[in-house]
Each structure stands twice: as C-alpha cells, then as structure tokens.
Length: 422
Image (cartoon, rainbow, N blue to C red):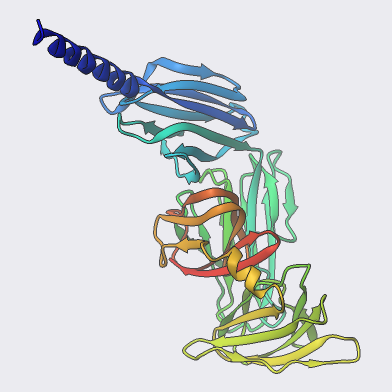
C-alpha cells in the first residue's frame, strides 16, 4: 500500500501536467481585423494550401471590425475585396501583433490572385504570439508623386482623365480619384538635343521605363493607371543632365531653421528637401538658432571624402550663412550643441534601424518609450511613417526599388537620421 500511494500521486501529477500542456497548446490567438474605407473582408480556413472559400470562418460585406479566436496550429486566409463600383481600391494591410509580450508592427505585402488581395496567416503550437490586429485600408484616391524639373532642364505637364473621362491637370504631386484611367506626361527639354526619360513603379513596386513619343519639341507618354490597377504612382523624370544628390534633414522647430538656396539660371530656387542639383552648383546655407547659447555645427561630407566643417558667419539679421559647391554627391548635417547633447545621446543610445543594406524588411528598434519614424526616398518623398512602442516595428520593403533611403526617428522632440541602402 505504501508503494501504491506514491505511484498514484505521480500518475495524477502527470495527468495534470498533460492537461495543462494540452490546454496551453489549444489556446487560441485573438485576431482582430479593423477596416478603413469601403470594401469587404473574409477569413477562411486554409485546406490543402488553399482557402476553403465555401466555408468562411468570418465574413461580412462592409466590416469595420472582425474578430476571430484563431486556433493554434491552424492556418487562415484573410481576403480583401474593394467595393464593386470601383470608387474604392484595396490599398494596404498593416499587421500589429504582440510577441512574447512585445508589441510589433509590420506592413504586409498581400498576395494578388485573380484580383483578390490575400494574406495567409497561422500560428504554430509553440508560438509566442498572443494577439494580432490587421488594419485593412481601402482608398478612393490614387497617390501620384513626381519630381518637378528645374528651369534649366525643361518643363513638365501632368494631365489625367478622371472617372467621368474629363481631362484635368495635376500641377504638383497629389491625389487623383480612383477610377481615373490615364496619366499623360508631356516633357519639353530646354536643350532640344537632350532626350528625357521617365520611370515609374508598377503594382509590385518594380521600376518601369515609360515609352515616350516625340511630338514637335516635346515628348509624350501615357501611364495606364486603371489598366495597371495602380493606387500609388511614383514617377522619376530625368532630362539627362549631370546632377548630384544633396542629402540633408532640416533641424527640428525647437532648435532653429535651415534654408538652402541656389541659382537656376536667373531664378533663385530653394532646396526644401533632399534632392538633386546640377554638378558644380553653389549652395547658399542660411541657419537660424532658437537658443543663442548653443553652438552651431554644420558639416559636409562629399562622396569619397571625410566630413568637413562649413564655415558659417553671423550677419546683421542674426542668421548664420555659409556656402558650399555641390561638385559631388553631398551629405549635410546640422547640429546645435549645448546642454542637451548628453540627453539626446541617451535618448538614442538603444535606438537602431537595421539591417543596412536592407532587402525585403526594415526594422526600427526602440526598446524604451515611444518613438515616431519616417521613411524617405532620395527625392525627399515620405514613403511610410509609424509609431514604435517599447519594441520593434518591422516594415515590409520588398516593393521598394534599390537605392538610398533615410529614416528619421523622433523621441521626446529630438530627431536622429539614419542613412540606409537597399
């Protein structure tokens, strides 16, 4: 009898442990789908690698929020449909999730099959993910970005046909309605011997060359927005001149201001964001300081050289001015050194943006407190922004073309810029 009691106790203990393990493995993962804009979202089980479209788990025509207790070990498919009359189009899916107690965020690149936008997701029994939210966005606007040529290069006219087939002009980067059919570009070089080129991104984010036809002294090309099902169009125009890239991030408002000007023929132009100028262009830098006690430090790093300080002198307007010739790709850094230097260093001591060079994903890591980030391309166009809260933000970048990018991270009003390559 003395032998049986320990064995019985051990058996009961093993049964209890097994029950706990089975309960833990069977625990579900809370999935929430939040919708922005007009469309439909459906969740299916995946059977033999494909969604079981005959048996939707959760489905509604115009959901604002869907919830699902996803079973661990199973896989599911989230499918998104824009509304039938094409006033809206599917735009993006952002995945927010908690893994091992840390909140993370990533912009997914959905699979596209037969016009259906789909994301497959599932959870293994050993996963540390406890909750997931997908933010599905539909839009009634098409984003169109393009660089405006300098006077010395030539002129650009951008027109489009709206959903009612009315021809309209887009004078600067902006939005056009979903359902617009075509973008018509007309380029006229200042130098008739030069031939312009145009590139734009297709739906997968791949850069494509636009075929141009010469008409008189101009060149015309058409981007079939509706036929290619484009929701965001980034256009890069070149007139074949020898240009160099000038990279900089303006100071925060609490520190001061930076103005960069240069001559384009007889006209004075302002370089408001990172951009290109003709090789040999003289740049005039004008900086104002909010705190006179702080020391202004402006450095210039030319490609292939070490960073060197730019001599800045104060004028009668209490502005600090300096000059530099952009005869090579150039990176400008502006710092206001003072009592906050150590505080700023401490704020960003554990902040990281990696990997570099990056490929299909980019991670913004800020383990303590909140941080805001912005991703820019070399034209200074904002591509993505988000919030990092006590953890890591993972951004899908597979759709971005190879090149130079910049991430600006802001914490407690202080900013730091990270230069990256893809």
